[in-house]
Length: 482
Image 1 (cartoon, helix red, strand yellow):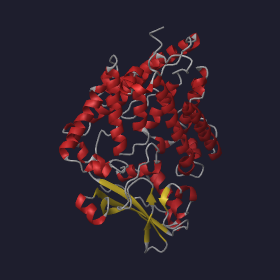
Image 2 (cartoon, rainbow, N blue to C red):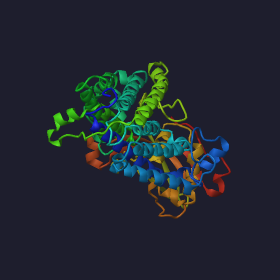
Image 3 (cartoon, rainbow, N blue to C red):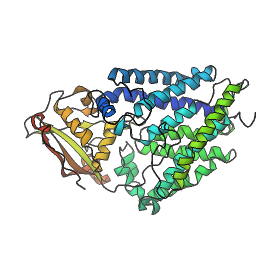
Image 4 (cartoon, rainbow, N blue to C red):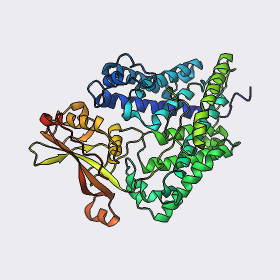
């Protein structure tokens, strides 16, 4: 069945299966490390209370009972299965084995996402779920990759890129006048080590970057469906653009997962033409079992039907960004940075033993100490740091931020482990407060003179000093400042 078996795309399947599994491994390790402190029984947004108030919005193993022990069992099971898939062990067996492995990852991670509340409300969570579900039907080494699933991965890559392009064109004017990168590297959620240098590139080059981005996201995605080798070239352009984003910022696993998905359009022959020393990737396939063909066609039909909603969203004037249209997180809408902020504000959290001498808590990823070079954390996802960025934009965060401050007053060890620096070395402060600072990158001259990556100035107070005695008795939130 030449129309079904995609011989000559073995490397694409290997990259998809092992790459998606690697991202799942990172996601489950992240959950094991961060979920209990953020959402556990004694977390900032405890899952038991969430389930008691409103219930989960989709399937989850935690619907009837949540405990930190069960969460860790789910996370470590997912990490172990992911590691096996990265090593390629299930893929060496019959096709039902990697199918069950990926469906298990999908179910376990969906259980986490569906109770993760605001800490898991990111587009790359649904992207990972959708990609993991589709990867279950790529088969094993015993059969040729199924062409319908590869096409669905290409359709996913199209939605990712074209959706992001359209949200920009329909959004902030700076994308249309090509000035978005005058601001983006400085105001993005979590700058990386190279972001300062990217920001200081000449403005004409920034305009060319934006123009190139529009071409990559609005024109190139259509070429992913073209005959080979055009489709492979289009995928290479997407991959190169995503690597540029990897270098210039920290967007968790979004860029890496997009690179992996784009490989669905890359043929073995195209890779061999560029790297002739790699040899032949295609093993000796056996006949495709009838049951596998039926399952793949049924799943492809299901995903095709579910594609109606994201396809309609792409054409809508009121395009949704990073939205799921069903409780299973399949057939989602994607897109990012429809608007660009021009000024950067940061929330600086401080504690004091006496109310006079204030010391600053430092986060792992978000800007704090102006002299500290931004670090690279992606594809790992620092969830608390990301929500601190949204909080600095003016989002309402009382439901988790005031509990966070109370945890600092209690010197709660799981919470402190989410931070880079505890200025009190485990001792509980008597007071905590949250101040607002305006941040901008230093100029070349300022950097040479001071060694600082950032120049900051006070811009207000978000939360007045709290103590454990008074913190629970009064409302300390001051609201918007911008």
